Amino acid sequence: MKQKNLAALIALTLSPFASAALPDVNSLEWHAVTFGQSTDLNFGSTIFPEKVGTNQVTVDGKKITSGALEKHFTIESRGGKLANSHEGVTYYYTALPTDVNFTISATITLDQLGPETGAAPNHQEGAGIMIRDVVGKPRMDPQPQGMEEFPAASNMVMNVFRANKKGDANGLANIYGVYREGIYHPWGTGGNKMSREDYVQAVKFGETPKYEMSVTRTDDTFEVTFNDGKNTKTIPLKGANANIVEMQNSDTQYVGFFASRNAKISVSDVDLKLSEANTKDAPKYQAPQNPLVFENASSEHTADSDYYIQARANYAGTFAVTQDGKELVSNKKIKAGELFSYEADIDKASSNFEITFTATEGPDLKPRVHKLTVTKSIIDNR
Image (cartoon, rainbow, N blue to C red):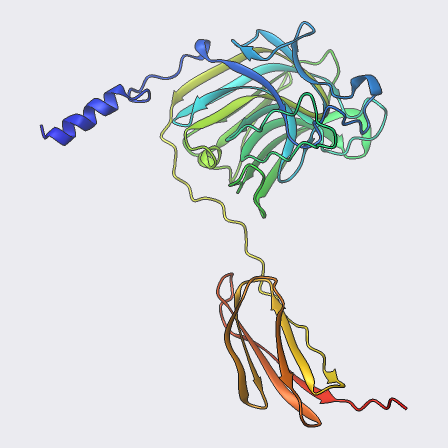
């Protein structure tokens, strides 16, 4: 055996992920954390005064932080939000390597959903099972005066209770399979994709109904399941590639339970089954590019011989200008959104200008032209 191959084999053997052995689910450490926008200790919108700042995981009324998986626990959130591009949540989770597939399941009671004050739900609240590629920084406690929690963005999958109807506190919830992709920074990435499918509608909630819920990760995708004791429904999350939870952290994925905004769940009988993964290397999601916008910002009239040609575009590129066929500007580089301006001289009644913009980025790299005739006006100051 060649020396370098032997060294590689030794290194592989010593690696913590060298063997096919799966993590011991009974040895995993679980953590409780609150993070993200609107989880501030003083956030009080549609929240009873005595509940302001209540975002916690408890066992028999006592707050928990880290340790072995609890046999039963409650997550209550009076703050946070579920938004298209980020969230604020209270999360009880553990970490798994990304080369592992899993099914996480539990018995969940949705104790309460929506503002307790009687205000209508706005679909920013929810609770259930969540899978993420990063976990946000814990909220500030104590909270410095004048500070506000920042958004926390992640590629993620949820099997989640949400209000049956936005703006209607009717005591019913829908079950949604949700995923988000296209997040490449923990503060968010413009143009990300958020997909939601309410695959079970109008289930009752309160302290009595108990439901079985699960999320499964396979080599290709994710599946969500809901069982109301009579019927079981499972759907694949179409378009949710298994590797979306590897984008910001290629080594670790986070699985657990959450509540957000105005929601409370009781969870028991958590079961986590693991298997080896051979994850499909699906392409990263890229947000559709906005079309090129090239705007002329030049007036068609001037009262002075000194005249400014102006234009701008939403992508970086180069500008060129001609006046009556004579080149004034060539290959002038301008940043996206920056105003291009050039002072020309009009020494006759009118001049014909052509402004050409050629983008160096974006979906359209062909030259675009604005033509305009500028008339010199005489102003009588008498």
